[in-house]
Length: 227
Image 1: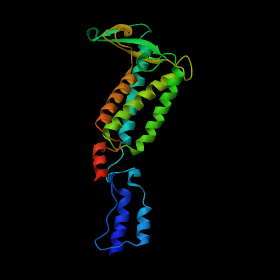
Image 2: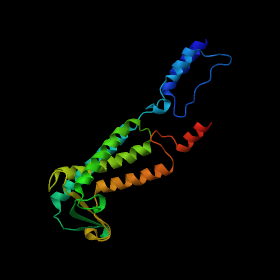
Image 3: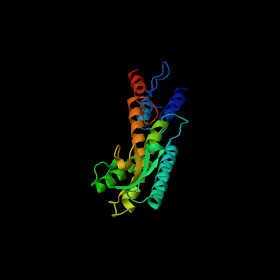
């Protein structure tokens, strides 16, 4: 009976949620050295990629959102390049928004122009890290955050790779100017820039709330570890 109970406990460890603690043996049972050795060789529950049984990674949500952002960004840029001449301004919403056509060799919102290659390499690194993180992502909020950032990074990366003046040095198409033409009030931006900023803000909110990638809260995990 004791050995059967031990086997059940051992089999439960790999799928245990984060915060799992070593099970106690039945009252009066003294585990053998073999049973103790088997339990000690079980994988750390914190390394389990599926910490909550029945939950699935939010990888599909992340990739779907990133794909949607990338598609919208590419389509809007193609339309702008085909219909708006460089330097032309189209007034919309009573002057609250202007459509224009500029090329940016810097980061989002025309920041640090002239470092195109550096920002290209950063975008590649960000994309790789997010894709590698996706397999252990169980939080819907973080899936949305990383999906927005990934889609935006890829959108601008496509411009830097394929547009003039050359490979890794291409100018990103910016076309949204708020409250004034040509970025007089706020730097001109595009859909990818907006997605990156929105994802960054949401990520800060989630971090301040203590929400982890696996959907748990840092405070709850600390309390579980303390008990």
